[in-house]
Length: 301
Image (cartoon, rainbow, N blue to C red; front, side, top):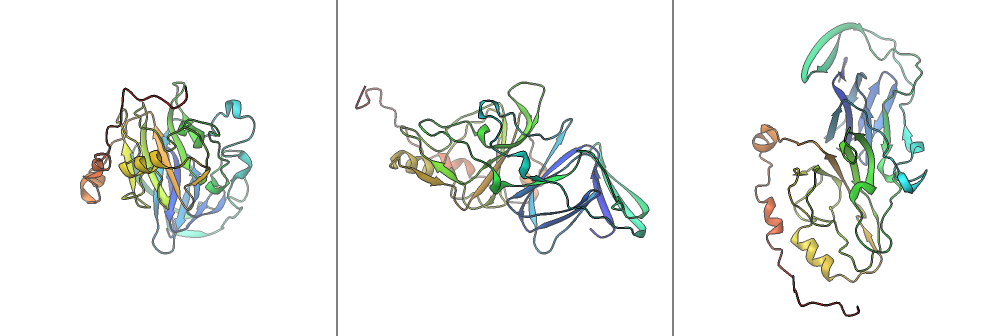
């Protein structure tokens, strides 16, 4: 973006680069955001992005509220994404006159453009706490079950944008980082479920544990509100026959989820134009077999 910047008057952007490095210039300074890092640029902040080479990723936009750390409850003062690991931009400014500098804004879902005769990044100093920031996902402190059962994925929440309805969010940003799995007498992968949230899954790198085939970095899955889903056939068979010893999970992988209590719609571009929609996606569950035996009893009561 040469002599051009952008700002969002509608809401906040959470940006997840998947390929390529983002060099972001803001009114507050500069940020360099690499894959396995995220950044949040809040409502009204002017910024520009420079890239070199092939670059892609994911963006989550929220309205009416801002992202914040989740309430930790009985976890206590420390855990998950710690405040100390969030970084604000490195101080920088430019005092530059530019003829026809373009300022693009997003307002009520439409794009507008204006011109000015100087760089908007000429802010020499500021104070306050309303700033863009970035976070390295490798610094997330994982919490997990250590005896039995499978925890709700909310334990992997990095940031949340809460709604007015307790127990739900406008949006959660959740990751599935490398970790130990040690539960006994438990089906360790994510359980089969349906819930009141829309789940948009993305993959930054590696292979997602519940769908190792067909889900590629840069791709995505969407499970809408109350749509049943869970691990594919291969994952189920491997997990139900595996010896339950302490095991590393998701090494070399970083999957994430945008979760929302609101319904998500797929655009015409995503459904048709891009020609990347997997119309056979449902077949990953077709091989699941019925294992119920009403006469089964445990070896020890």
